[in-house]
Amino acid sequence: NAGVTQTPKFQVLKTGQSMTLQCAQDMNHNSMYWYRQDPGMGLRLIYYSASEGTTDKGEVPNGYNVSRLNKREFSLRLESAAPSQTSVYFCASRQSQATQYFGPGTRLTVL
Amino acid sequence: AQTVTQSQPEMSVQEAETVTLSCTYDTSESDYYLFWYKQPPSRQMILVIRQEAYKQQNATENRFSVNFQKAAKSFSLKISDSQLGDAAMYFCAYSYSNYQLIWGAGTKLIIKP
Image 1 (cartoon, rainbow over the protein chains, first blue to last red):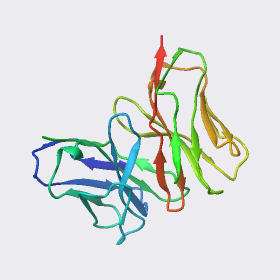
Image 2 (spheres, rainbow over the protein chains, first blue to last red):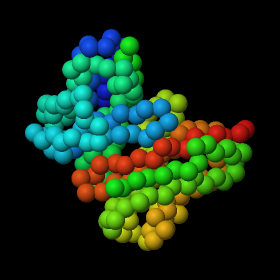
Image 3 (cartoon, rainbow over the protein chains, first blue to last red):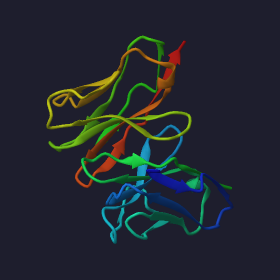
Image 4 (cartoon, rainbow over the protein chains, first blue to last red):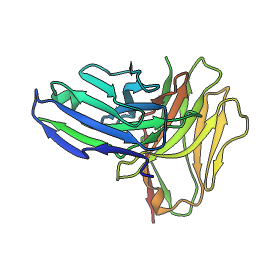
């Protein structure tokens, strides 16, 4: 039981490049989330998926897209990376009782 | 809008002593959840403890306990018998409706040996 996994762990991009961050959970959770964490701040919600087939914007969705591929997988795509998107990205999942469980994070640097 | 405030950017405590981390929040909701998460240098976000707003009894998990004051919108974390492994960033978070988490800015806890 791996919980929530994320790939890659680290990534360096040039401005304008695109990439997809992958997230998978093996806990059979319905809801999944993508957050970003900037220095000195708590996490901010980018997008979430309440259930398979649905996605909704969070607090900071601009510049990102998501896909809920199936119940297990929820990917985050940067179409044209910008330096302002340099951050640590966390994926989380939730089944019930509000508690979210987090992946190990991806550190992304955009030059 | 819901907000979460952690007024202590950094706290330090001697090993084996007790420390309390503060958190206040603002909401007009009556039914919600509150959490403390720990983030060690590994960056992993680890759930420490959670509290349901409808429960008057304060949550406890081994050496970790909370003081939940609903009327005052206060949710502090007490760590007893502090250990070196407790050193980390601690985040207070609030959850409501579709269970989005609203986060405080965090408190860095330093444990002195």
